[in-house]
Amino acid sequence: MGSTFRLNGQSVTMATLVSSLVRYLRRPVVDQTGLTGLYSVDLRFQPESAVTEPGATPGTDFPSLFTGIREQLGFELRASKGPVEMVVIESMDREPREN
Image 1: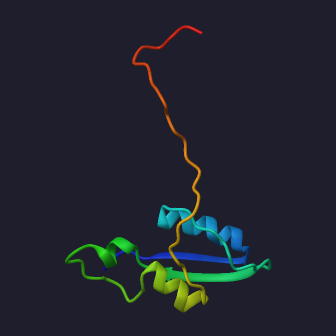
Image 2: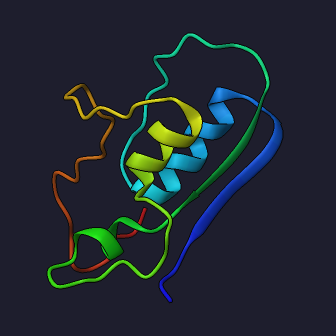
């Protein structure tokens, strides 16, 4: 049987849900729902790798994260492009310098 994940909670804000999704997706997630209330969440899914790896056979009856969010919570995740914060290292010395 394959791995399954579950997000479950009562009185969950969209900000909390989004921060949880970031951990699983490993990419930025932006809440554009405009919802400000508290919600009950019970989301069960299998990791994307179990669905997308070549030759992999899903070992559970649970959907991928994207499908689970749509079917179980009624939201849709859409990929889009936008500004992202990043750190740029312009130079580096191999030897430490004195201050």
